[in-house]
Amino acid sequence: QVHLVESGGGVVQPGRSLRLSCAASGFTFSNYAMHWVRQAPGKGLEWVAFISYDGGNKSYADSVKGRFTISRDNSKNTLYLQMNSLRAEDTAVYYCAKDRSYDYGGNSPDYWGQGTLVTVSS
Amino acid sequence: DVVMTQSPLSLPVTLGQPASISCRSSQSLVYSDGNTYLNWFQQRPGQSPRRLIYEVSNRDSGVPDRFSGSGSGTDFTLKISRVEADDVGVYYCMQGTHSITFGQGTRLEIK
Image 1: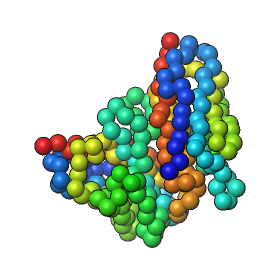
Image 2: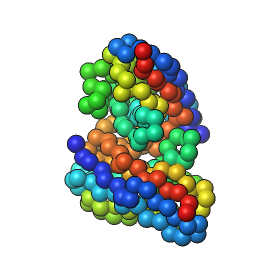
Image 3: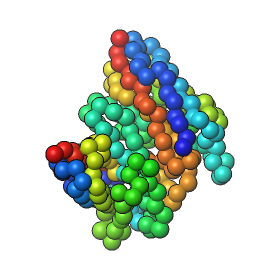
Image 4: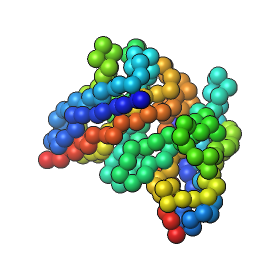
């Protein structure tokens, strides 16, 4: 069955960087697009970033554009989120999610990981 | 950006009674391929979100048939025919037609 395991969260000072990873198993990772979605404490879900099956197509929420970079290594079945210039408002649980499709357009995250907590604080 | 508006934001329901959540989008969710990418997610306390419904009305595997989705264009509804204790949590609509946006969430609780 589909299994997604995020890692790399922790406490980081404002302005610093952090890289999240998401290890995928139970499906052919290289055939599917992937997402990062976050949830601030006590708040709702916010989509963060998307990457197509081959990494050729990427899209970002305005709130992270220019600071975050999504990438993937299909040889390692792993999704990444490089987060730079972190702000207090980036504090959240970050979930990786598999999409139903391989590329952008008509998207739907069908399987989610358990999430990893990122806390931005001095 | 497409704005998704859910109502109500809080939904107290008696066990065994029906429940209904509305979701409205700021523009039509019909995609160029003719499909409508409106999904519903359930997030139980302390858990990750779980997709319940995709493309307006299709239940995901393992989702009880007490859950149903309907709607078209910009107006959509999630219905639970008979609420059980296990249904407590927050429900989100999400559109995947114009990038991705979520509704604010509706918190379902047992009265």
